[in-house]
Length: 425
Image (tube, rainbow, N blue to C red; front, side):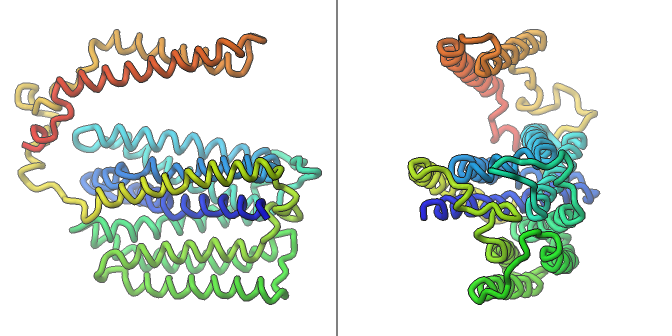
């Protein structure tokens, strides 16, 4: 029975990722179609408060899958390497764009474009991975035996388009809850058309699953059919609540309803496919790790999940309420490109707090080379020396990076970069 508990942890982490990171991916995609730089900057600031905590759930899902269901890990990863690697690169670029856009005065269109495109690419790749797995991956004895492009099927493409629509809907619902003014009105107008698109995608993917899934779903089983029907009914009710809530108060109602519909949709997929994890025949029991690994997983990863959830709740509490749009006085204080250095606030004028650019470049190059060397040693490229070099290298790299980080922050603080009161005046 422990393997089903591990399977539950994987589903919980994946579900939390879809619910939490889905809305900020959707906001990133929506920013591509927004013509207002002010609203795009506002969208970025909304995401900057919680994106890192939201993405922690996919890491927990990967760890739980690797430790609890290694058969699934060994089958799925080789089968979806290409979209998975592209997704990870997009997530890295997206996080970089969020942080640099948040630190920049005003709006930087280049980073905004990276933020939007990487959000779209990550979403599409996630849909391709999910659709490729549901379409079935060839395997024998827990080893992937298919080809490089087996994940690219008509159903996986439809899943990618459907997931884009779902994330767009979640993003619009979140924007209605967290914004005011034109951003709030725009989110309310987008909600219902996106809800129609999600409903259409759900119908197509639901009926298409019976054609695409090679395991021949058994809806003649009463328990399976009952759970699937209940999940679909809950999703329909939540969709109706979201339809009524878009453009109306209270503003939180559409997002809660959309989150409920997403959770019900995920449960419907599980009800239709369990206990098979990778179609056509890799079950939870066949893919599970030994009993000791299962127990260690439940204690280790299961204990981490409440910590991550607490961090999510704390971030929501700290940044609760509406995002405050800048007033006319604040907007006037933001320096334009034509503002002279003497007229700019101290926090902006002292952007070179890290020292001369040559020293910064040399320091970062050396730190990068040190990181590459540590990675090479950890992979035993030099042969038989990592047993004593690897721990020392990791320790040196970590301490050096921490020291440089603290030193840089102290110099930035002394230069006034973190003086929020001065920046607001």
